[in-house]
Length: 194
Ligand SMILES: [Zn+2]
Ligand SMILES: [Zn+2]
Image 1 (tube, helix red, strand yellow):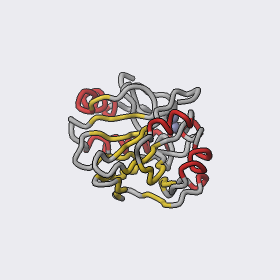
Image 2 (cartoon, rainbow, N blue to C red):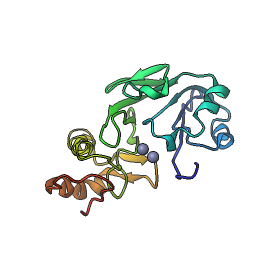
Image 3 (cartoon, rainbow, N blue to C red):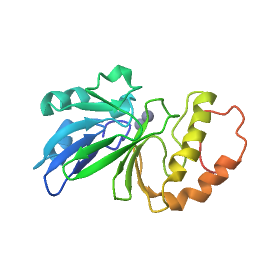
């Protein structure tokens, strides 16, 4: 969706047809098509960067459902604040919230309970972690990778905010090698092989 080719996600409970929209990045008509034949119950944000919010106001006005975001996302006027460990129910399914700061303080991931898929936003991509804007933020990213993301099983399938999805186990060795190096005061766009 939109000029930054951001991935938006719609998750629908096949039994109850309840659905949630994650990151309404743009193209409201496409989002409504994705939500067709379902009962939307919430809009969720992985984080508050503008490239994930392009159609937020329009989708909020159209769907009239609560907006949920991490409690550090103060600029987004959410109806419900999410924190690490919270579960968002969608019909017979649940999404577990993981706080994964670094790229931005309000970055969260949504893991589908009893399913290998995780919506990871810009926390991690196939080729590297999300962009950081200070060396402190980069150090936070390193902690998030070590303490949160690498704690997930190898079969985890990460669905990021940009680009293709990937299996965590296929990247684990590269991420561990990346974490084992001294990156000094680096921040910015990182790749696993640096
Ligand atoms: Zn972002
Ligand atoms: Zn993004």
